[in-house]
Amino acid sequence: MLSLRFMDNTIQMVDLVGQYQHIKQEVNEAIQDILDKGQYINGPIVKEFTQNLTHHLNVGHSIPCGNGTDAIQIALMALELQPGDEVITTPFTFVATAEVIALLRLVPVFVDIHPETFNLDVSKIEEAITERTKCIIPVHLFGQCCDMEPIMDIAKRYHIFVIEDNAQALGADYYFGDGQKKKGGTIGHIGTTSFYPSKNLGCYGDGGAIFTHDDELADKMRHIINHGSKTKYHYHYIGVNSRLDSIQAAILNIKLKYLDHYNQQRIQAADYYDVLLKDIPEIQIPNRSAFSDHIFHQYTLIAENRDELQQYLKKNRIPTGIYYPIPLHQHEPYQKYVRKMDLVAAENGSKTVISLPIHTELTKDSQSIIVSHIKSFYSK
Ligand SMILES: *Cc1c(COP(=O)(O)O)cnc(C)c1O
Image (cartoon, rainbow, N blue to C red):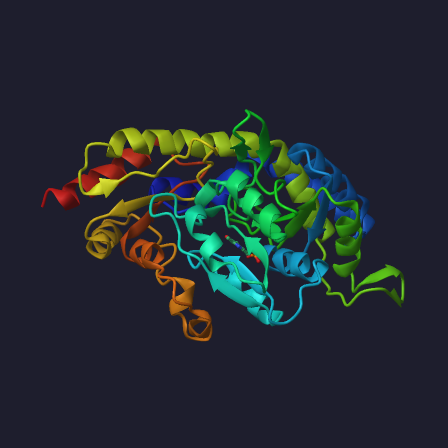
């Protein structure tokens, strides 16, 4: 299997098998240990990983849960928002963000993105606020934080909550004007993340986590993930069943040690792409904000003739991704939430973005091959 992969030199969007090879023994032993002990749910390893994660992010509390979608849902449940309450978010994100808002009978209000960072355009948030606005969910897309300082400032002035959807930027630092820095996901009232396998910190199944500095919210969310029960068969909240299992926690506990290194490997690959791609006028390389690290969950270009480029690369066996091909407000179930504000940057983004392979195992040789095909496409 492995030798085949190397022999045919296939370039992949993500290479989880290659990454696993470096930690195989550690991971296998940790999984074996759980199998030997039989503590599949809420074993001691879940607690250990949770403590390490809390420490790594320098946040008050981490609450592991079943996946990144549940994490956002549980955060919204803990804030006790009422049906009809409005939640401001971006239409240029994975569907989960808006899905859980609608699922709880809250109203997603889409605000346009900044055309270069693809994150919420902070200058457009205030005009979307009404007396029903209770929460903002900024999404730290592609590995780079939204501009959190002005977002928190708006939230404070209007008395609204902020939940950071940090499924794509776990480990990235955000820099405040006064020089202070905090990890993305630890700045809002609540932060969430996903451990889906291809995320920067991914497990080998589903997983997620919620973060907060607020003791009361943390306590509530710890119970909500487990049917709202504080002690067995006593229910204090309407809850859900959303737990991180011990095997995933054991894998994550190992991979957390390497998270900074993994993110560094992605940044190095991105830096090299930047150099290789800088002289192609038809392409705009990723924007890097002064106020945030970019840990390149995706390496996303704005490209002329995007669809033809993708087809051309596909013919040459170079995989690419389009995140996201249709902004959320244009999908049928979400159309009813559209307001007067235009969402032009999100609509343009959907037509022009293309993400290149980026992962911890990407070689410079692969990157050169990828870029040589991009160059030959534009010089046709
Ligand atoms: C992956 C992702 C989610 C959902 O995480 P799951 O673990 O797949 O449920 C939510 N929001 C964003 C921005 C994501 O990228």
